[in-house]
Each structure stands twice: as structure tokens, then as C-alpha cells.
Image 1 (cartoon, rainbow, N blue to C red):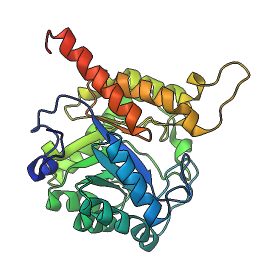
Image 2 (image 1 turned 180 degrees about the vertical axis):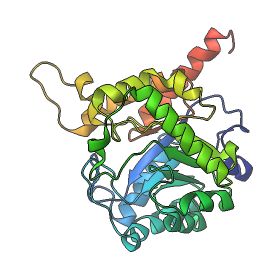
Image 3 (image 1 turned 90 degrees about the horizontal axis):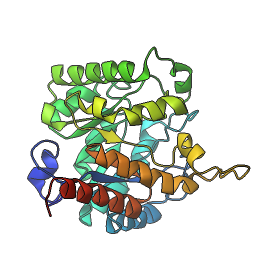
Length: 293
């Protein structure tokens, strides 16, 4: 059974499923300006086709986002975000694909759940909209709360830490505490260290290396490294510079394998076929090491 095979598992995917491998979230940006695939899937028909393709390639859930959070991006207004995501979420859900919504707005999250979404992924961790945590508590929906310091337009100004691992752990723990205080069920919370969000490349690598420490916070951890710029050093060789984010897919899949082997709950990726293989390799190695089959 996968984490989203049943309604009950969908409602409580975190501690109650006993899933033996890392969950794969397939990225579906229905935006014109996302850093990797902006404009490719901003039409409803192409977005639906892409979501179904990602699911067939091994994604457990498709993460649909209508607002770019690339460095420097400006916000879109709520009606435009709704226009972009709701038809896609509804169509994918009706086709049997499990869907999450990537949004910082409680109203968008509510409409997405009505359309069939089963998880809310808030990159602001509830900080961008004061209504988000109460909404999550009232809806009893699984959620991802990411480490966040500012909106995309200015976030890199805030990539200043005494110790990035200690500071991110402290701030994530505070986010979780505030969610719990708002009434969010602890079994519904996943934390995300926010690689690349108000982080330099070195800081992102430090957080990846500290996944066991992050897991020590007591909540499942989602890793979102796919195609991000800090991976460039792994695909740029000598004078050969690869500026296309898709050139980072191999490095992204390597990170997925490392994250899964380090006990991450999930990975958020563009190339779901490679990531699905990577997390299964990690699971197979764990069972082999434990003497299992």
C-alpha cells in the first residue's frame, strides 16, 4: 500500500501508514515564470496531461502550484492563483491522481481541498497568511510547513545565520509549536528545511548533510532539492557550464537517494521516474542491511 492508496491513509499519511519507503511528490508548476519549467504547463490541458504522466512515472502525489517562489519572483493575486490551480486539481483528482496544493493562502488551500486535494504544502510554514494554521487545524488535513523567512522577491537578503543547521532547526521547531498551539494535529505535520529559500549554496548543502539532525525534531522531513541552483557544481565540469535547470536532474536524483537513505519522509522532484527508482534503491539497501528481503 502506498501512502495515498486509501482515504484514511490520505487523511493521516505521516505516522500511521508504516510506509517502507520515501514518498515521491511530483512537481507541477502551472505558472508562466517558475525557474525550471515556467510556461510549459500553464494551460489546463497540458497541466492535466503532465500530472497524469508524473503519476504514471512513479509520483505518489502531484504537487500543484500556481505561484512561482523562485528567487526574485513577485506574488500573483489570489484570483489568478485560483484560476491556475483549481481546474487542474479537480481534473487530476477526478481521474484518480492524488494531489497536493502548493500555496501560501488559506483560501486557496480551502478551495483546493474542495476540488480534491489531499495535502497542503505551504512554503511559508503558515507565516504568509495568519489564517493558514487555524484552517489546517479545522480541516484536519496533512500539511508541509517549510522553513521560510521572507517572500521570494527579497528572501535572499535573509540568508544570514549564526549556524544554519541550528537556526533552521530552532525556527522549524517554533513553526511546529505554533501549528500545534493552533490545533493542528501533530500526526499531520511534515517539516521542510527550505533548501534554496533564504539559503546560499553552502547553507543548503549543510542542511542536506544534517538530515538526521532535522529528523531529530520529531516530525517527518520533506526534501525539495530538485533542479535548484546549488546543485550546479555537481553538473558543471571545467569550462562546460550547464545553465538549463533540467541538466540538474541526475544530481537531483542522487539527492533523492541520499535523502531517502537518511530517513526523509518524502522528496519533491521534477523527474519522478528517476526519483522513484532512487527511493526504491534506498529502501532495498535498508532491507538488505537489516537482513530483510
